[in-house]
Image 1 (cartoon, one colour):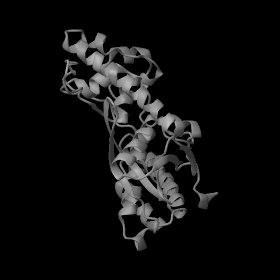
Image 2 (image 1 turned 30 degrees about the horizontal axis):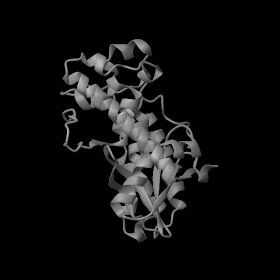
Image 3 (image 1 turned 135 degrees about the horizontal axis):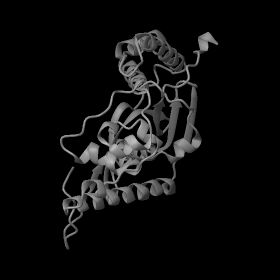
Length: 286
């Protein structure tokens, strides 16, 4: 974590460098932010989660699929890439992992069947960045599509519940990606899409200057709170006071639960496979 910024007369204010994930972590729980970004060494984390293993494998397979030559971008290739990126971390046992590998392979096969292999994206897993009056924002976009004269931010989802337009509109990360795509690729970009592979649905939203400005304002407010907490810590405030815990049911799955007595008292632990989405048959099995 960088040193707190000093507001000295005549000195330009240094931008706060952050990602959407970093801001969201503080917004959810300042203590979890401290564990992740301030304390060194970083406190030990709990075990990996099976739903994260599923999501990581799907994302990696889709990225690798677009990196193949056009003639090799087939549904069968997508399945093989999914198998190659698969991790058993977080699953109850080998049998559960095999079942979910087959389920995720069905998702990704159905998904790429609807894609045009020749419709080359402007980027996959593309790092983008933008600045505001107070922030230096950066992030990695799953896919950037070319739709006519404009670019579209595409984010893959593998969670339990299909995404909605409200999710697309309210996502701080997607708004930051729009700003980053505009700044990095120098092309018009307003549309964001959440592609939920388990249900095969797409939730979309067209950002306006006003909606983006609202997201920027909220992000800068969070960054200001982070700066205040960091300054208080540097001034001698107790760490748990400067970065207080926000106990709740989310403590059941916090990565830093082993290091947080408040979180342990707030909610019981969850099994590492308990957030897997409901298994749904692929199109070929319906």
